[in-house]
Image (cartoon, rainbow, N blue to C red; front, side, top):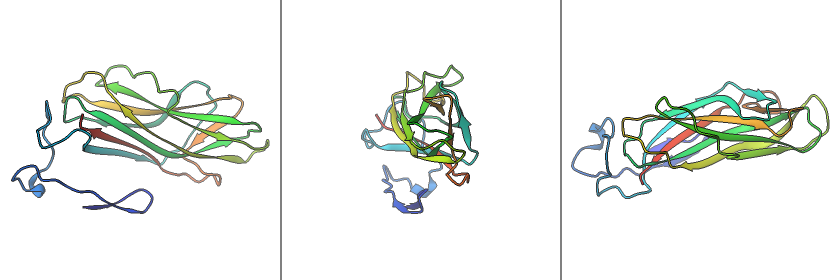
Length: 193
């Protein structure tokens, strides 16, 4: 089937029928302790996405929550989770090279969040002192996570965090140089392992 991606393009995804069931009659995939022989490892089992408009700014040199998170309930017991995050990153009032770091942390059920990956991605800005926002680049990363042991009824929650290399300046996500709000996208892919 076809679907439009976030950049306005069109993608095509193949659907494989594993048995005699009609694809249109399947409302969701069952929870699986192990994969059926018809599903090789490396296949995408499910995709969930969070798209959010509110912007975020920080001057913290330690990771702080951006306000973007998404939960996935794996349907197989040993899956990997591909975490994909995309957003514009910008800097406020800086005169030297300054870096903004973006990372992800994971929670199993209601447990504590893991330490963030440091860094999953960073953007770097250069410019002269002023009140204008200085463009960085797309604050984007993809990370293949191997969650700790979990059951198929467990939930995995991923949240985005960010920090800046120099607390005298500001790092913003979700705004462009014209101070217009852009979307932030967090997509989770369950990958058969």
